[in-house]
Image 1: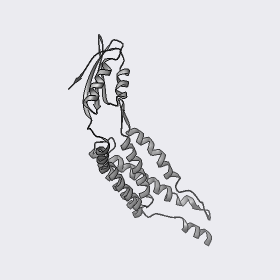
Image 2: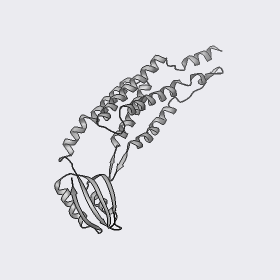
Image 3: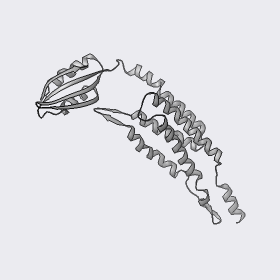
Image 4: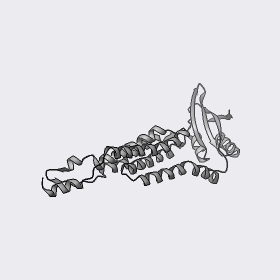
Length: 238
């Protein structure tokens, strides 16, 4: 092999096994920090999920940048390749996992914050896999602040009244549908936690778990729903 080819071969970056282990460990540890916060709040994706996402992203980044050295150097020449091609797919691929954490319950949607945290944890793993430890640590610190202290500040600033919970039992006439009832609750900005149906000989009964901001809102919901066509009776139950 000529000296030119040797020089080109030396220019191709490599990664030792202990450096790879360090990057994967850092990614797992930083992902675990975020996972602990999600685990304590009993969210859909917790400690293990966030650690797996971070370590997987780091490994994809390492393989993308250092995993094909033998194929890039051969035949007396060095093939130039983009080491970010595989890592770039993490940005879009993590969206499928995040979508699985989003759950629609009635009229309310849960899991958006967890899906966003998985997306950011993937970025943290990518940074750790690339050896940018400072960026990964700084982002982890910011994410912890956003998920914990900032959440309390936001609740104090924007939520004046703690939402109350109740269960609304609605009896419908035969052939009646729950759609008008749910639409009315949505117009009142009340959150539906769960919805149960029970068919009867004379119609259908709905048991709706509702979160509302004030007693006035619950009274307004009662008045509006009672006036809907097909509603025979309704009451708030324990």
